[in-house]
Image (cartoon, rainbow, N blue to C red; front, side, top):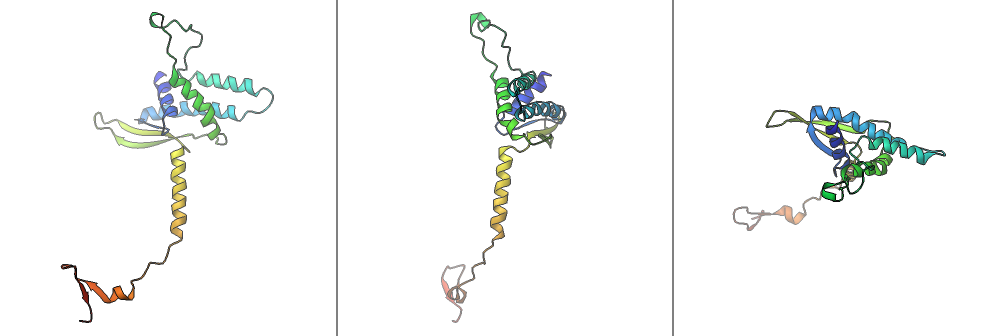
Length: 183
């Protein structure tokens, strides 16, 4: 369970929204991540009178999936009376999940992750895979640039033909001197 929590936090907090892991771990991680994203999606789709209470309930349910820290403990119960450091990775994942990812997948009914096989790892021959969130910003940029390239290549210009002077004169490749064809 801790492994899945840590992998989920890494996937949500990663800049590229993808992580490289072994294929069995990626397959186990997929339903775990999809359940959490579904909770954030439900929170963003709420409407009615008690939306804040329901959204808080969904947020607390999702916090149970992460190491979001124990808020019940005293602040000075750390080592030798020092302040206990906050568990920032889980809290950051929860914040990003409900602020950004819930809105992104608001209209998507499921299928928030993609698994791509990479091949075998050199050391132990384990099968590696990339698990990533679909519709990530890098993927959107690539689609936009591909669409832009496609529209720009559709308008092909006529190739410029050789001018009459350059067709009559040729350059001697070995010496670099211009040679006249008529002579």
